[in-house]
Length: 362
Image 1 (cartoon, helix red, strand yellow):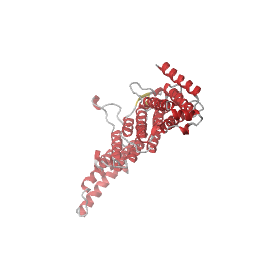
Image 2 (image 1 turned 90 degrees about the horizontal axis):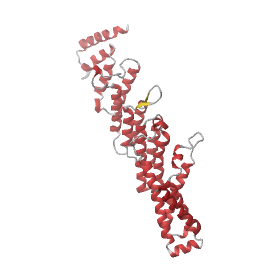
Image 3 (image 1 turned 60 degrees about the vertical axis):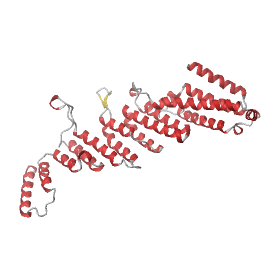
Image 4 (image 1 turned 120 degrees about the horizontal axis):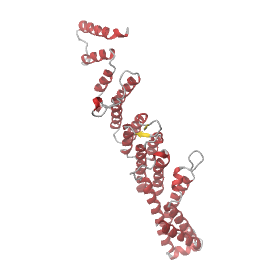
């Protein structure tokens, strides 16, 4: 019967030790035999303890640490080890769930194992995928979020400490996190927004305003579209993508207005434009400012025309409409194009619109 297995195993080990005289015994035989007997006797937790110790404990590498966590989860699901405690032991201190600690330790092991140059993206991606099944927010009977588990904080921390070098890395990490954000994880949503913001900052110095505007919009999309409505707009958190997007639009618009004024004050250029020369006959600085402003405006127009997948306007589209900085950017683009054509009435009308928008905003 199964109950006889420990006794039979113990007798077999004694017999093997007596006849073999430990001639072929390995250095771990003395330690492994009692572990085997404990497990055979029904103490499944001893197996987890042994694997944890043999694999390096808290300093274990990624694979053995993940396997230890998996072994514990399998034994717990099979009812062979206890599940998470419902309250602190003896009414004092903080209850500790071994499964949680093993899983978080495994995630740290993954990040540490892939900390080398060129491997960090793989480490973050694998750690996030490992943690995601454990990270959904806990809800009460009415469906309201009660709290976010430590796993969500670990996902947010992994994302926050990642410095992306490519756009595709940000796209993949945020796509992995999107289902968790859709379940109401504010911590992970804010971490994804900050990740998009860091990528936008990288484009400022190396790719111009268009790339920066794109990633600022992606960060705004995370917190305005992906999160459930009841979880948006957490108190005390200032969304970096929204504030810097406003600043970007205002800066691009002002640069174009300055270059337009400079071009119109330049006699030869103004004459060429007045004769119908158009944008090709104006200075490089003006053309560059107009191109940048048009690129950002076209990107915003595409977002403004997007829907929520059900035929309605997306939350991001609603957020963009009627925005003072966007209105200023649109007026600046129309002003620059009219000035390049030599269309004085339209240019004057755009100047008035810019002044009215600033007056109403103030």
